[in-house]
Length: 122
Image (cartoon, rainbow, N blue to C red; front, side, top):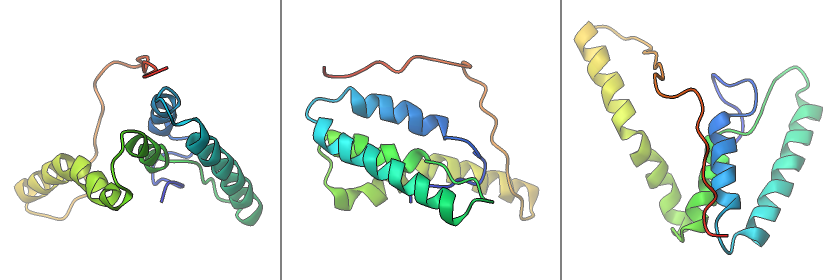
């Protein structure tokens, strides 16, 4: 988890935003340094092993860093990821039930095009 995405063929913009948040958290420097080095190695190895596939960092990778930074125990990361998706899964289930057929719903973001993510802590 943390690499590859069905939609994003470039670096996941959500991962970039969460990386900024993690960079702004106090006491994260050493842990984040390791995470960035691991990311660099993984992306290089994926590029060498699968040159025909675009595999980039996705939202889960830096979401884990943020959860680590706020002190959430690692065994709670998976249920936290799942809970964060419950509203979307529920909306898709309601949409599918109303159409009375199996569908692959689309989600369209209609909020602001860009926004700054404030650095925390430092």
